[in-house]
Amino acid sequence: MSEPIRVLVTGAAGQIAYSLLYSIGNGSVFGKDQPIILVLLDITPMMGVLDGVLMELQDCALPLLKDVIATDKEEVAFKDLDVAILVGSMPRREGMERKDLLKANVKIFKSQGAALDKYAKKSVKVIVVGNPANTNCLTASKSAPSIPKENFSCLTRLDHNRAKAQVALKLGVTANDVKNVIIWGNHSSTQYPDVNHAKVKLQGKEVGVYEALKDDSWLKGEFVTTVQQRGAAVIKARKLSSAMSAAKAICDHVRDIWFGTPEGEFVSMGVISDGNSYGVPDDLLYSFPVVIKNKTWKFVEGLPINDFSREKMDLTAKELTEEKESAFEFLSSA
Image (tube, rainbow, N blue to C red):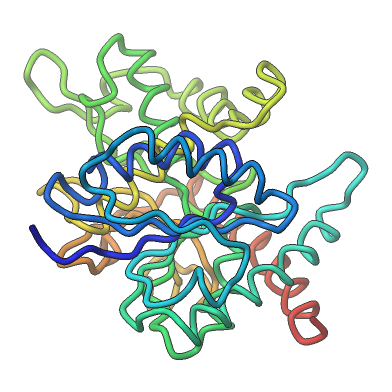
C-alpha cells in the first residue's frame, strides 16, 4: 500500500458531500490501492450533523479510509493537504442579489485561500465547487500566492456531463459514445456548451456530432439553453439543487487530475486563462477544454472557433470580468 493522502472536503455536512464522500472513501477517485485520510470541514452550527456523517463513514467500514477527521477549524482542516475539494459556500437565498452572494463568498474563499497558503502542501490540488465557482476559485488562488495558480481549478464537469448526456439522449446512444464536448466560460447561465469539435460513435465509426445529428437549430438553440439552465430545472423539480450528479462530476474531475485524460479525449474545467490561444483575457478563471498528464493540465490548442462560438465565448468572458471586478473590490475591503 502507498502512503495515505490527505483529502479535504468542505461543506462536508451538506448534500453534495453526502453523495461524494462514499465514492472518495471506496477508491473510485484515487484508486483502489490508495489509502486516504479524509478531512471534513463545516461551520460550527453544522457540527452535530457532521458527527452523523462521520458515524456513517465509520459504519461503511471502508478499508482505504485510514482516518476521518471532522472539524470546524481551518488550521486543522487545511494542514498538509494533498487535495482540497471546496464544496461549501454561501448559498443564494431568496431576494438575494448576485452581488450580495459574491460578497459573502469572497469572505469565505479569501479565508480558505489564506489557510491553504499557510497550512497545505505547496503541491496541493484545489478544486472549487461552491458557487459562484469560477470567481470563488480565483479568490482562493489570489489569497494563496505561494501555491501555483495552475493547481486551482473549478468544476464545470457537471455542465460537460450534462452536454454529453443531452447529445447521447438525442442520438439514442450511451454518454460514453460521445466525447470532446466543451464548456466555455463561467459555471452560470452564460456558459457556452460547444459541440463543434465533439465526436460520437455510431455503428462503430466516429463522426462529428453536427454531422450525426443534422439538426443545427437544436444544437444552437434548445441544446444550449437546456444545458445552461439544467441546474435550475433540477431545483424546480426536486426543490433541492443537483447533488448526485454534482458529486459524480467532482469524482470525474478529480480522477482525471489524478490519473490523466484518456488518449484523444479532452475534458472541460475552469482554469486560469493566462496564455490561452482563444482570445480570452488573462487572469480569469474560465472553463476551457484541457488534456491532463502527470497531474498537469494543458489547454487543447488550435480548435477553430466560428462566429457563433466567438460571440458566446466573449459574452461569458464579459460576465466573468464583471464578477472578478466586484469580487476584487470586496477582496481589498474584506
